[in-house]
Length: 460
Ligand code: GLN
Image (cartoon, rainbow, N blue to C red; front, side, top):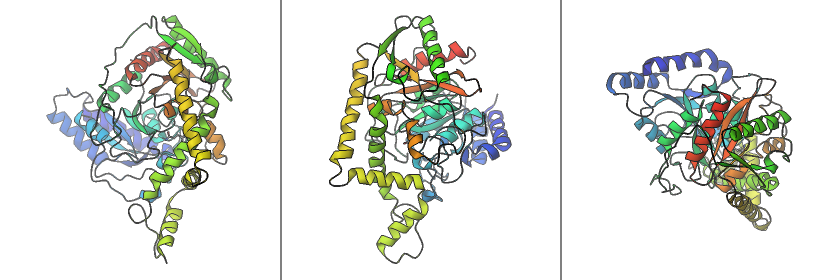
């Protein structure tokens, strides 16, 4: 297949389905066609992502294309340069097809909190695609792109991957450059790929990973190549009781499916090791304090002067700030700025932010203890299947609780991969989360590939 034929097939899917799915905020049809034609005519086809279409979450800069981060605050902004991850994709021969929808600034778990329109799950249009990288996941599930970039602060790659029947990798904190990515919570944010198979995720990951001098938090460790395997002889798979049999609010079909996944790993030679992550139940509280505190600092730049939409005719400087922010930031973003500002304020910082940082350290220590007896961890990605649009929006806390299994690895900075492991009785996809030791992406990708092929032998 030529790059042009592949691009035309994706554009045809966008034309046919994106009116109802709303995966994209911006489609660069002309740019994608032009690049595909250039690749077909000039390139020798040897680049690792030659001619493959990639959709980019709209909090990642692509030069010359609008960037909104899902917020009306940034409407009309067009970045002048590419994020480092985009530079790497282009150098690897990829074709960028467009910018995908997200919860405003990445704050949400359903893509209903986009400042523009909610994205729908292409597998069931009444349901959410997950979030905040819901547009990226929906674009792949509807065959509008081969793969996509997402960002993950507390689950935003893994959970939409699970909700749309895809694989999605959140790399180790610092593994992938964030230069040119809109900051949400800087001690947690990571960029990573989503695709239909673990092998495709690995192909994009290999292009993205590695040190970048433009990102001060970028890690210098060498990137390990993946050794694909067929058996898992001797692999020790940790099973945390707090993520499975003692988990609060875990759907029974998902629980059964994760047990089936564990059986599949054991059948291929893995040894299951029961472990405990005793601070799991404090994860949501710690995450939503750390993330909102950092968000309140990061989002202070959108003041209508330095960055962001400016309210017309303010009477005073203070009025300019408050009117600009009140007019252009959504309710959930405002709630989080208020929460985070409160958690950092004089007199409350010790009780809230500092305490959350201490809990975060305890959660990281839980994982360090687990690594003494196991090589990877396996559990559910989400406690529930994709919910109906509108079902959760009235109760922000209920939606926060849906991140119960993904925030722990984020707080600990660990790599984590969601792998599709089948469907429930309503044909809704179920994802399993594999968590690895720092910089052991190659390990969880190899195990995830074995796991995916155990349920979908064609997924190579
Ligand atoms: N749902 C979580 C939040 O709203 C995680 C989002 C993300 O990873 N960007 O913060």
